[in-house]
Every structure is written in C-alpha cells, then in structure tokens.
Image 1 (cartoon, helix red, strand yellow):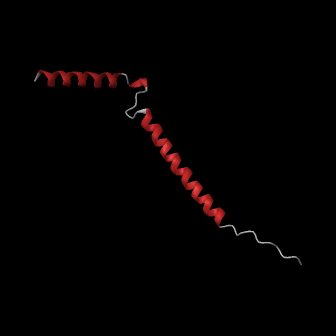
Image 2 (spheres, helix red, strand yellow; image 1 turned 120 degrees about the horizontal axis):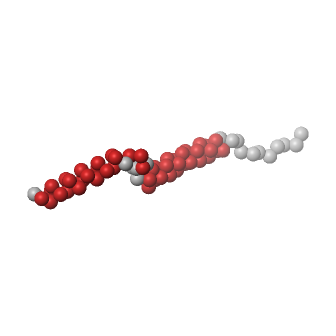
Image 3 (cartoon, one colour; image 1 turned 90 degrees about the vertical axis):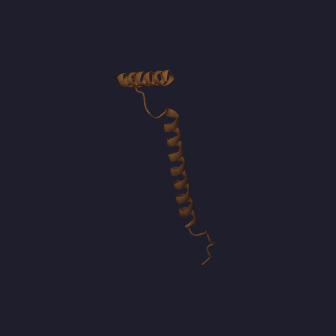
Length: 69
C-alpha cells in the first residue's frame, strides 16, 4: 500500500508544480506532435493543389497545326 501512496503523492506534487509554473510556456501537446500535424496538413494541401493544377492543365486543348490560308 505504501507504493500506491508514494506514487499518488509524487503525481499530485508534480501536477501541482506544473499548474503553479503555468507561465513557462508548457504545453500539453509536445512540439513534435504539432510539427507532425503541420507537415501532414501541408502535404494534403500541396497534393490537392497539384491535383487541381493537373486537372486544369489537362483541360487545355492540344495544339494543332494551323492550316495555311
């Protein structure tokens, strides 16, 4: 039972320290997760822009040789 009490006290103390020092800029989400999310969204946006550009370019009629008058 003393191990459970020790873990409880240690966890409670650490959470109190984190709440007290809230001005440090600590975030509940790690920076790596935020960066991964931004890269993921940027990849999707780039892929959509590329697909739209390819569709637009494929919609342009092919060049045909003009006939002489």
